Amino acid sequence: MNSVDHDRSLGGLRVGMVGLGMIFSDTYEPFFETVWRRPIYDRAHGVCEVTLAAVASRTGSRVEACRQKLAGRLPDFSSYCGENSVDDLLRHPVDVVCVATPDDRHFDIALRALRAGKHVLIEKPSVLELSQLDELVAVAQSNKVLAKVVYHKLLDPDHKRLRTLVMNGSLRHVNHGYCSLLEPKSISSNQFSEWIQGRNPGTYVAVHYIKLIDFTFGGKLLSVQCSGQRGIVGPATGNTWDSTQLRLNYRYESGRDATFDIHTSWVTPNNFPGYVEQEVQFRFDNGVWLAHGRRRGVECTIEDRTPTDFKISLNNHYSAAFLEPWNETTRRGYGVEAIEQFMREVAYVEHGGSASDRNSRLKSMAERNYNELASDRQVVAAVQAMESLLTAHAQGYPDGVVRVNDSHGGLSLYLPGKSEPHPLYAGQV
Ligand SMILES: NC(=O)c1ccc[n+]([C@@H]2O[C@H](COP(=O)([O-])OP(=O)(O)OC[C@H]3O[C@@H](n4cnc5c(N)ncnc54)[C@H](O)[C@@H]3O)[C@@H](O)[C@H]2O)c1
Image 1 (cartoon, protein in one colour):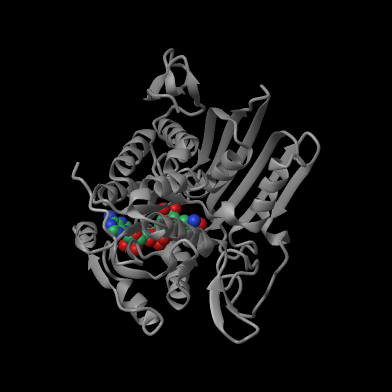
Image 2 (image 1 turned 90 degrees about the vertical axis):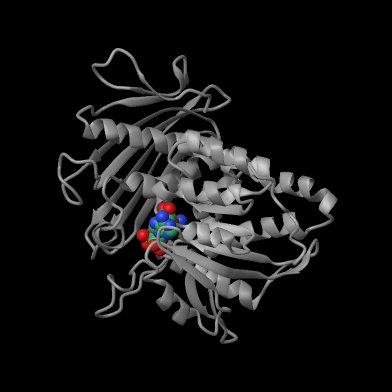
């Protein structure tokens, strides 16, 4: 591994963006626009300019539209596309790389960026296997950079409040819960049609709730089960899934257990009023937490526009455009805040004090376990287990269970009719 030059004496942070799809438009674009208007400030480092320096994408088809949209709102940026776009971007002088490509392409891109000594932010799910997580964490540590993942639901004010009530003991011991996230058919048939073959909605969206449960309630993951349905996005006997039902079992320090069911789909009718329908319920010893996207507050109907090009259930907390009372147009929300928070952490590492103290600043930012890659172990374990269970199902072996840290290893897949488990990960999860 090459040693990495950490001389970033120029100040500011230059960001390279890989992937210019839906999540870029929803959260990164408003972040770059906002930070260009109002740079990050902290007493530790003063003003820190954060600029979008370069972008890389597969075909480059969205770059021109993006450039035109952002003209006058952002300085111009370099763009690379095609086979070598990521390597080209890494030759560009960037300090940070954000990875917002389809989830099965995160690992390779993040690895190359970390090897090049860049701080890395990956969209959820970070990676699909624990061995990949191990490798990224090792390279980040060795090259002394941050490697983090975006789970913006942790920054949703409702979920912050939930965690507050759990942490201060108002809500005591979660026993069980369910979460449901239903995406419209347009996502599977249109938006993601290029990469959907062999994929499932659980890895794409159940992972939001896996993280919420794992981070909010703590505990040790014991086992994972998953069922699923096919026949709309792909053939009824194929390996592309319409919907999935994931079950996670946890054990807490008290010796007590909890079970969570997470149902997801990306084939809900496009005109379903919820559009992206989200619901969670957690049952505690002394209480119930129930949240529903359509009960958050606002529903808006506009003739000929809702629910297809305009959503009926508005989530004004995630990422939305606002005309502020002083007539400034802004775009903000917890989706944008998650990216800003990461940039603040990098700014603190690079510019928050003397070069000799960089290591201690790096350590303190790396210890923030809400977004740190090394703290994503149980989430990645659940994703790897879910993917393995669905693969086994597609091969004719449904109804398996993956056990975590049992006598056979870190992750072991048990299938009905097979006497021995199939090892998925040898080390401890
Ligand atoms: N946090 C959220 O709520 C949320 C929402 C949507 C998506 N996401 C995540 O963001 C990621 C991207 O999702 P999306 O919806 O923006 O997808 P998308 O299909 O809309 O866009 C993917 C982008 O990646 C680029 N790309 C694909 N392969 C590439 C490669 N090998 N090299 C360089 N660029 C490549 C494509 O050109 C495209 O610009 C996924 O990991 C997804 O899970 C998160």
